[in-house]
Structures are given as C-alpha cells and as structure tokens.
Length: 476
Ligand code: NAP
Image (cartoon, rainbow, N blue to C red; front, side, top):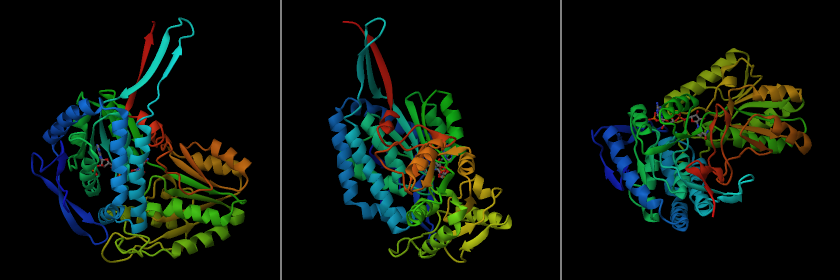
C-alpha cells in the first residue's frame, strides 16, 4: 500500500503525533496496512492549505475547473480495476460491486465537469420598484466532508466533484474502516491538475474531536456528511454553533412494494438489485419487502432461487458475488436481526446462519412472514437479509411503508402506471424506484426526507450545496 499517510497541502505527512491505526481485510481478518491518524494540529494545517488553495481556485474560470474535473474522470476511468481491487480489499465487497462503485464514483467527476459551467443565475425586474434583481451563485467556502465505509470511493467523489466545480476547497475525513481508496485517489487528482491544498484527506481515530474542531473554524462554511442518522444529528448540533451550511445524507429504511399486477421477473430482478447491491450495506437497500398476498408465494420462491444462486467468498475471487460484511460488529448485528425476527415468528426460506471460520461472512438470507414487531422492520439491516411481509390493501401498504422516521428511497413494482404513479406520489420519500431496483445516478438529485437527511447530492442540486446565492438589487 503506497498511500497511507495524511494528505495535506499536496504532501504526504505522518501527522503531528505520528499515531497510526490498522486497516483490516474483512475477508481474511488480516491487517492490510496502518494509516496515519490526524490530530488537531493536522486539521489546522489542512485548513491553512485549503484557505490558500481556495483563494486561487475560486478565481479560476468555470471552464478551467470543468476541464480539471473532466481529466479526473478520464484518469479514474482508465484505472477502474485498480480502484475496484482496493475497494474490495478494505471493504470486502465483491468484484462486480466494486467495479460498479468505481465506475459510479468516476462519473461524479464527469457530471460535475459538465455542471461547473452551468452555475446559472438570473436577472429580472422587481415588480414594484423596477430595479433589477440580479441573482448569482458564489462558492460557499471551505467544505468539511465526512464519509462512510460502505462506498469508500463514491461517497467521497459525490462530494469532492461538486465542491470543486463550485470553486470550493475541501478537507475529507474518510471512514476509519476504509481510508485507503480515498488516499489512493489523491495522486490521480494531482495528475488531473487539482492544485495542492484544494483537496486534503485526514483519516483519524480521533474523529469526533477532529471534526468538531474543524466545524468551529471560521473558515469552514459547509459540512457535508454521509453516514448514520445518529452521527448526523451530532454534526447538525455542532454545525449550529457557527450556522454552517449542512448537507446530510443519512440512514434509510427502504420499503419495496410488489403489487399483484407486477411483472414478477422484473420485480425479482429489481428486488435483487435493491437488496443485494453492495451486499445490502447500502442506505438505499430494500429493508422491508411488501408483497401482495396473491403473488407472495410465487415471488418468494423466485426471489429465494435467485438469492440461493449467489456465490459467497473472498471478493478478490472474480467468481464471487457476495463478499464479507465490513467488520464483526456489522455481521453480528445482521445475525441478531435474523434471530430476533425468527424468534418472533418469521420463517427462514434461505440462509440464516453465519458460517464458522475466518472472515465476517453472512449468507444471502430470505425471511418470509416477518412480523411488524421484528427489529429489522424499524431499523436498517445493512446486510444480505431480505425481510418479506405481505399485504392485501393499497392504502394499508402505503401507510406501513411511510411508518418510519426515514424517507430516503422506496421501490414500487406494478404494471398499472396510473396506480403506480399515484402510489409513488403518496410515498414520503426523497426518491422512488418505479419498476427499478436502482435509483443512484450522478445526474439525479440523491437525498431523503425526514430523518434521512437534508440537501441533495448529484444532479444540478449537488453543486448548489457548495454555493451561496447572492442577490444584487441594482438600478442603472
Ligand atoms: P457512521 O458511523 O455514521 O460513520 C460515518 C462517518 O462519520 C465515518 O467517517 C465516521 O468516522 C464519522 N463519525 C463517526 N462519529 C463521528 C462524530 N462523532 N463526529 C464526526 N464524525 C463521526 O456511519 P457508517 O457506519 O460508516 O455508515 C453506515 C450509515 O451510513 C448507514 O446508516 C447508512 O444508511 C448511511 N449511509 C447513507 C447514505 C446516504 O446517501 N444517505 C449513503 C451511504 C451510507 P469513523 O469511521 O472514524 O468512526
């Protein structure tokens, strides 16, 4: 592993206290390497670097920023297998998932290269005074970016690319389980023409204190976080002290509804994608699967067959579909959800027992008859476990789907488009997959309602998270 130190002002440094922490391969439980852990003085150095770099970068033309981002896309696209391999090593996910993530991650550079030149404003007449109303968008300031372990590349590029497109500098704090991919991206950004100090990476085991310190520095104006709702709440409280601009991509508890008129093959394919992409370790993962009673048996049998055909093993083996979960805690939490549901009356259709031996593996599992009282109905499973319930009434299933503090994404399968659109509009979710098990797209505004977050990433909205709107009232 070549890049294991802090990346500050374009240089690789060991950190003020020279403390390091281990990064483990979840398939083998072996230590891959150790990574430098940032302290407060390192954060101050990164802030100084970001301040200096942003002064120059924000003065560059949008076209220049666009071309640097475009180059980053080209370079990353040429090295997808290398990034995918690193993602698999530190996160565990299988080859196909890792390649999918690397491709998705690179696409944010291309998309925001295209958006960098489209920070459109507006000019109009004030209705009463006749003065001109001029509206423009300006870079908001330095962004502190905090990312989770489930997408070590994409959750970073989804924030870095729009920030750079907007003209901002950033400091990124990757998850401690998976800091290597983000560090490995930095030489590529340098090669693309990103100036030193514009993007800084600070892995740290003193996460809370480090982030809190940065959020209280007057030069920071944006805090962009992807992770759990519990940590998001803490960051919002911290951000309130200096009234920072927050972008929060938090937890989910996605319902997936299969109506009796759905094309069952499409529904099974969509459910496989919505459940098993990233082994279920995704905020978008279908957490509650509601199937109309008339088709429940047929759906469950086809879906279980598809789940049963997946091969589990070390993700570096290209024939493997399902790698290990990221760590022992995550695996044990998944096992506890299954045991709780079974104790409360759920039936195990497939899987349901963690294998003995090395690696944090949990097999693809299908539970039917899951009672409303099961813990996995209220909480994110974050693993390869499909929890199936049945329904007979449309209003009832919409009520049950909306009965959660989360509102990130829902999935609907029906061939009756009138009914399907009516249902989509009544779902209190930021995103809906209609006859599709995948909604993530760099060109679309990703984000949730309720306690799933604030703000949107991707689409046109993603860049505005790093910009302030300024209005000038003018007469001439
Ligand atoms: P997490 O525990 O919230 O950690 C996410 C990040 O926050 C990590 O970098 C972590 O650093 C950091 N962190 C932890 N405590 C902190 C604190 N007190 N102050 C500042 N930063 C802190 O989440 P996770 O377990 O990595 O990821 C899983 C969660 O992310 C799930 O709930 C999932 O739904 C959500 N997620 C949401 C989206 C979305 O777009 N909505 C996408 C992906 C994942 P350390 O690693 O050093 O602890």
